[in-house]
Image 1 (cartoon, rainbow, N blue to C red):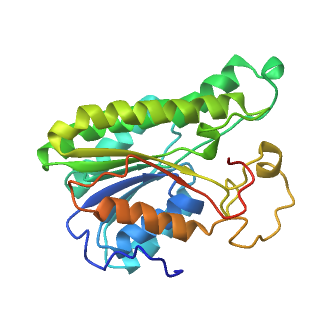
Image 2 (cartoon, rainbow, N blue to C red):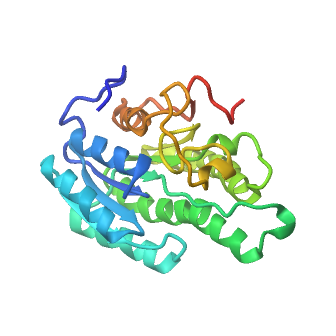
Length: 258
């Protein structure tokens, strides 16, 4: 893992249980492994069971427990059931990382209502459902941390990405409400707006993100996901009275912000 100025010592999160969505690849995988390296047990959610099993094997190799659930985050019942099963197996929940996201690019005039609904179901309703499921278990454990991963698309709208941008803007407002409701119970809620990352979902342009020609980029153009993951884990491990309410993190030569 690339060295960062916000390293978390191994064992810092021992005894903690974390749920990560989109955990099969990219930033989700990087966050899951960084949390495990810091001592947390993991509930891993994504659509690809084989990819999740591979990440779970890496988590277990670090000496931590892993619960895997292959689930479509647009399926509300399956999503809630998967989260509850994971919490039951691992004994509760302390950290929730709502990382998964999807997009259906295209102009508003051509975007179907079904595609609009799917993007908002995955990017906005799923974080709501998981936060709803997490609040009780976190309260019983004396507090917790919820990090919603938005995008610089939640700060600046782009053409041909209306559903995606709408969902990411809304996630910021939802996080503020979560924070206001959670602070009396020791529950912190933060929203992170990443810019370009070196993943298939790290491109700021919908055309680039869905293109087939993804060339390796310098860190100054596209952040390695482990650097962003290290920041998220530091936020989880920070003193309970400290909250980074909102974080915009981009490479030096970010194309989508400001």
